Image (cartoon, rainbow, N blue to C red; front, side):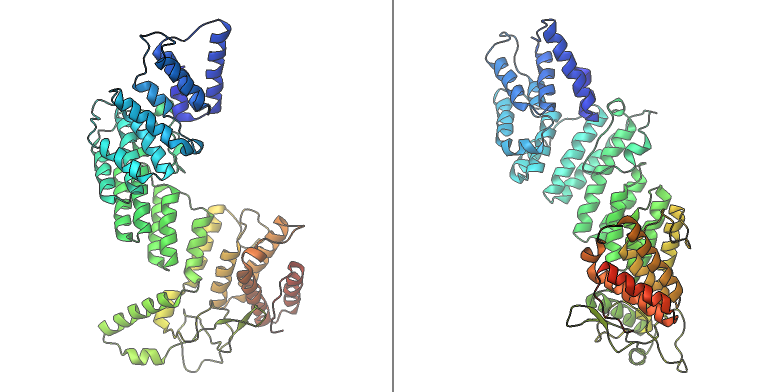
Length: 515
């Protein structure tokens, strides 16, 4: 029973509970009665793991009332068993769990790491921050030297997570220093890469047979590193978060999880910082962390989405500062500005186009003798916002957008020209950004290819029902159709224009187009 309980503590496999139940049933059939405190403790642990905590309380009351004899008394392992496997259903009865802890202290039974860790995690899940602070204060000076290194690491990581919940980064960093100071186990056994490649820092599961290996130590180390990184990003302390990311890559041989990299990708994509996105992408490739659809979507859309006026103002100030430092006449630069096309809302809620439509191929120099500008299909920017060419180059990155698309296709081993290739199913955000990039690069035929790819897969995935994007991303879908119609008009493709109008009718998209 002890061996099975130990396995379940790490694996959480229901088959192990079935084996434990078979052991107890066999004991009942053979009239074998568990009368030692060790057997009773394992029985309590089994019932608690099965969600029958009340049965565990009953056994503990029988122990206290002397049913098993005066020599059988509750010890620290009895309380540890009752406080183990605390679930969300137990959160409502958190007072009873804390009463058990107080009772243990009243009887003069010193708590061990398991009891304190269980209560710390329970208080953390229940949001009882006063109790959490009191538990952390009480367990601060605990002597851990006699415990195995991996158990020390698990306890220290739990304390660090609790300090983060209390927004005490200083104490969390102190726990991280303790964790780094431990001498890691010397064990050649390895946890399979599939078990740890996509691990969640909040859900740490280590196989029992490998619980004392160096891999287990590094899993606890990475979990605390990533929790600190996450709170730094939430506080917008990106330099501090990057410093901890570099430290983790240097001190922990396990690569950062995909989730941790997604935090950085989301942060930099929102601010259109393409250079940092490229750096994060390179880190993921170096560490062998796969780029999923979320990462590629953020990379591609960051190149082309329409920033808020505040971000445009910051970029303009950045360019102005650079111009002043290089003795460039800022006034002249502002005169030679380009007002990009904007989207406006009609009275019926549909998207319209402003009358200001000029050539916006930022990758080619602007000359005075160029022909009349044509529609560009660019994202929406306020008419009051005037962009110099230098600012536009910081806002839109069409070539880099296409490079990210090609990287994703290469990663998926998908065809770029075959729109029916099922290995790549584009979402509306990627389609929107890629079409904009192709139109800016004066390739309307390629923009139409991506549009047809999107429509084909949406019909394939939803043959007899409405496409979900029409309700979830109404304005984005409308703008995609608008760009497709504009691209077909520039190519004078009447058949393609009619096909677009037919698709809009089938999907129930009400959009006024300049036919």
